[in-house]
Image 1 (tube, helix red, strand yellow):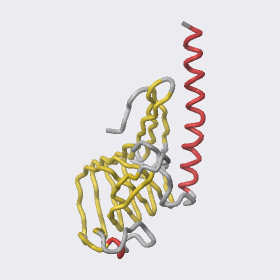
Image 2 (cartoon, one colour; image 1 turned 30 degrees about the horizontal axis):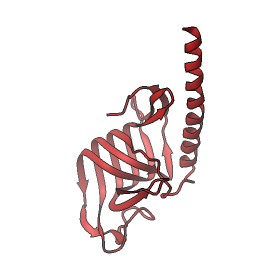
Image 3 (cartoon, one colour; image 1 turned 30 degrees about the vertical axis):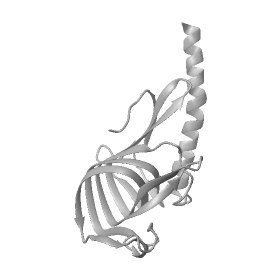
Image 4 (cartoon, one colour; image 1 turned 90 degrees about the horizontal axis):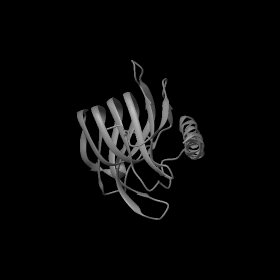
Amino acid sequence: MAEQGCVRWKRFGLILVPVAAMTSLLIAATAQGVIGATFVVSGDSFKLFARELRGQGFTLAGGMDRTRRGQAVPVIVSGIRRATVVELCTSALVRTPIGVVTMRLTGGEGGNEVGIDNLVIDVEMGQTAASIRDLELGRDAGSLDAVPGGPGGPAGTFGSQARVVTLRNVRLGAWAVTAATFSLPDLRLRVLRGTYECY
C-alpha cells in the first residue's frame, strides 16, 4: 500500500508543478498587462463566479474564439473598463492520468475586494441579477466606446454598452479572460483531486 501511495503522489506532483507554474506566470503576466485580448484558447471552457461585480463602462458584442485544433467557438465578448469584485472564484477541470483535478483561483473574500482594469471576458453562457445605468442596447458594435480601446465587434453588427453596471451572484461559463491589471489582495490557488467547481 505504501508503494502505491508513493507512485500516486509522484504522478500528482508531475502534474501539479507545471500547472501551478504556468498559472503563476499567467497571473503575473496579466497583472503587468502583457497578455493581449486575443489568443488561442484551450479546448475547454471554465466557470467564473462572483458574489458581486460593480463596473464602470460596460460593453457587449459578438465574437469568435479559436482552439488550437482550429475549432471556432462563438462567444459574447464582454468588456468592463473598471471592475470591483467581491468573492471571486474561477474553476477549471483538467483531465490527468490520475483522474479529473480541479484548478480553483479565489480572491476578494473576508472583506477584501478584487480590482480589475480593462477586463475582457469571452462568455459562452451567463446568469446574474443585474442593475444597469445608461444602457444603449442594439448599438453598432463597431462604435462601442464605453471601454476606451476595449473590445468591440464588426461594424454593422449588434452591440450594447452601459455607463454603470452592478451584477450579483454572477455565474459564467467562459473561454477566456484578460485584463490590463488584476489586483487580488488575498489570492488563493488550489489544485484539488475530483470535481470542485465554483458553482
